[in-house]
Length: 279
Image 1 (cartoon, rainbow, N blue to C red):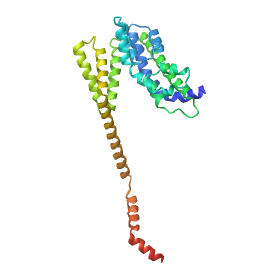
Image 2 (tube, one colour):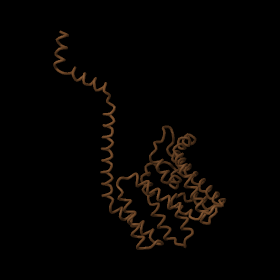
Image 3 (cartoon, rainbow, N blue to C red):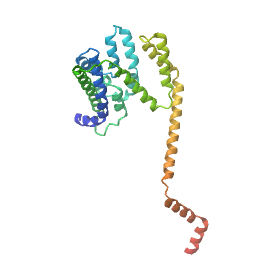
Image 4 (tube, helix red, strand yellow):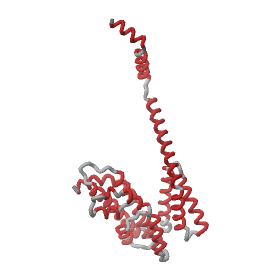
């Protein structure tokens, strides 16, 4: 049962492995460049396994001690996991002890697989989700640890490697921008960031920005949902039109000729002549 679930889960995690290989190594190198040995990314990946929050945690570790600020930052950045958990409640039923590890290891990628993939027939759902989580966790641990080791062996100047965190969030932003036609949420984020940067300065604008974005999105939820529904309806209409055009393009001249002959043969006059001929 376990081996069957493992074999079913592994192919779904291969794309995650490719992504984690790069990001995990970047995280390990980043931690080494910040003054930490490879043990830090190793144990942080084992105990935290938080992806983006681990990059932010590096800055927290080298900054003055501020536990309240760190807690609020981590809560705001990872708040989306609350909604992940709520949507997985039914899937977590009757999983026994496995659900605790699945909940702990729930990242964006792990959630995406466990939520959307139909578990093959004959494969235990609990073990399938467990191995998806375990494999993704292993990829991240291995990549971040390897990055920490490679970082200690590099002889090149690693000043500026911290920009990898900024680059990661920029790529995420661009990807979301390209996927969405309605950019209201993106403009809200950019506007709140600029305003809070001006008011609170570069050293204290992050938390007010996150709070402002969440508050504005909560107040604008109905309008944003309405815009998303309109966008979805327009996309469905475009898909229908495209399908009709393809169907029309597939009609060959010979097919048109046969349809015309069938229409002529179906006229009352031709039917009457056929009846006379039969009589």
